[in-house]
Length: 408
View 1 (cartoon, rainbow, N blue to C red):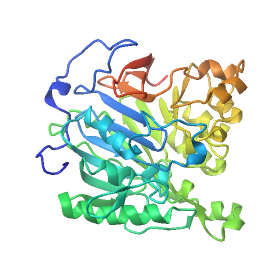
View 2: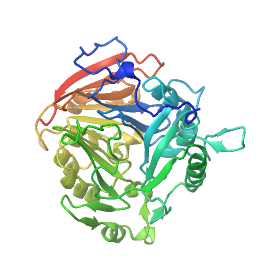
View 3: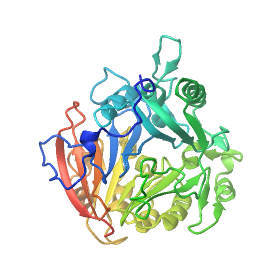
View 4: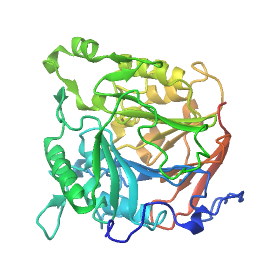
């Protein structure tokens, strides 16, 4: 499937009718995308991190698609909707409910870890041609992809420390396979570029003045906020002598900032190390939605970063209880760092953590509902809604909804 149906990856015309429409309430089925909206789907499978975007003109992008599940996490994080399929298969089925055309425009890989691209050493499906695939390669059995970007293409393993070599090998083989199968073109991720990831269907330029994507960083090099780049690698290496000149793969992640009118969102893979994160926060500035860096592990989501991005919505996926810490929850929710209401959306927060933190002030900002975190930005970007959709089944039933004004 994927490249043989003639579809171009745009959402179906029935979903793109445009015009104002009342948003649904808790208990309703999520309505899908309409022309002029920006949809962000943070899909929670319990085994990988992945975000699917539908931009205002209908251009589509999948950021990461992992399956790094290890049985040692089974007691903490359930597989969703069930363990009957691998993560890439569940993501495929989710995206099919949004765009039945079986093709997407972009796939962006943040870094070489199995929970973001698939770890065949842990879990894989053997295809009839003998390839062992999971994550993005398994997703793409159902979808064609037009453009591919990662943080190190055409090289791999730059500064590598703790990169998943089997995942790298699987994805490199998959890139060649997809190029042959349906013409997928790989591209280097250009730090600092504006609109390297572009709107492909806005032929009349309706969104040219309101929508943009800025490439913020990759491989410990970041955009300086103007016309230059900053190489943070020497400082990182100097602070980590035990890595013998390497950099943890997490901090090699690429990052992007999306802007639509006054609305802004930041997605930074598994970036960690607070001094580096603080530099990025100053460049990124205020955002409305922030995917937590490195699943909000203890080495990420530092106070300086949170004070800079001032997010109204934080979205986080976790694989174990160690990725949910009181210090980082304090940083994300502290009104001393910045004022204003906000929410923290966890795909799953184990009961042991809810019991441990019962009564803590930050728990008032943690959304009680668990599942897929979805943000729908209204045409023009002035307002947006945050939803939680059930991930216990495929009904797309709404468990939670909250409305926001962008830029506040």
